[in-house]
Image (cartoon, rainbow, N blue to C red; front, side):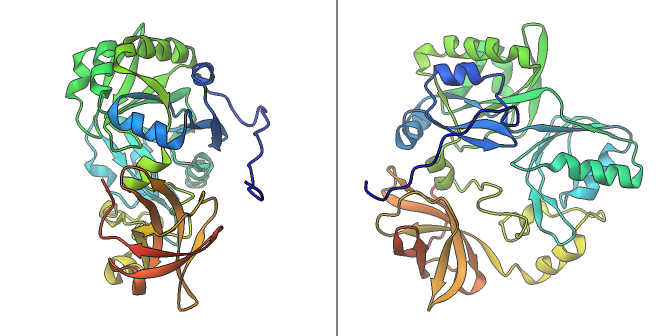
Length: 370
């Protein structure tokens, strides 16, 4: 199409890290990458539409090594965890995973990792895109906390889709079928035990395998692919269509440091009784509500790719923005995630959206599509 802009390719370098599964990803025919936590993250294999349809019916193996871990270990590990998140970390069970917003002194979100409690004095934080290790290290050093903070050799591999349980049971045994949502078990692969959690960035069901030791990456990848051949297993990746339909937020896109957990619709995770960083700022929003908040939206007409924040306008005045939007073949509409001012966030409200391809009409929805 004349005038259509195409993104340039990524230049390989030491700063853009390959993963323990990159050989398998490339052999599977990956067509597109993004860079996430200084590491390659596949974004498409066949097409967004075909990848989404396959995910909803079968099972996929996702290289999500970019979800880098920060290991927090030592006598003051829980103290540090309580300081940096508004979630009550003291309630966490020994085999539990917690979604934990991390906030700054103004209540702005710095990251939204999943915390994994490995022991009373040892946690992993599975990161969204952002250099959180330095933030935690700075606090620990400044306060003289007795804690070690490092990035371990751990690379997550996600198994997602309705056939995920069957594939995982073939490789690890039926023990995985009993793993509850956001809980984990340690399961054996060859001579190593891995943490396996029932979690993942889709709503199709599945697991995340925390592969400890890069040398196990391709042996595990190959074992999964061989075991799932009759299940129509394929390499896949987080899919923009499915995740927007599901209302799964992307840190750095749908919310940033400019937004609080309440604005991101995550107020239920702000229940800590401790004096965490940002508590005063969040207390005000807990009392009075946020000035803006995440809302599902439908956009009329052709929209093209959403590669930047699209302003939402009412009477020429900006009342929010859309940072994620795509056409959903399943639902037959352009699904979108908006950050909308309180004055215009009620379901049914019609707003203009300024896309890269012209003005369009957007309507606030009551709920996400799944």
